[in-house]
Length: 90
Image (cartoon, rainbow, N blue to C red):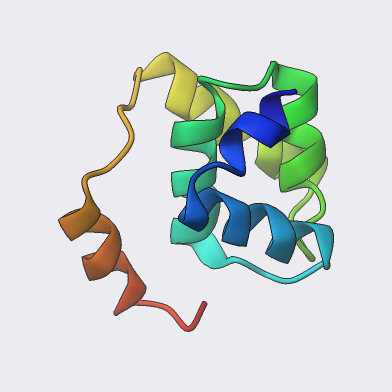
């Protein structure tokens, strides 16, 4: 159900599809995904999605999740996401 709720947003659907296809969504993609998905998914489900990113280990996924949770990051505004998109290929 959580992934279905996330798919209602185009950007999150794009990130979920890319992860499911085994694509590298880059640092900012993973960060945005974690910042938003933590409000919809439990930790194991979110970590399972992040670990589909190539060359992103279980330890790295856990560290990112705990960083986002620990600092209580809010999802970024549209302007911030657009800025991050200029800084990476994905």
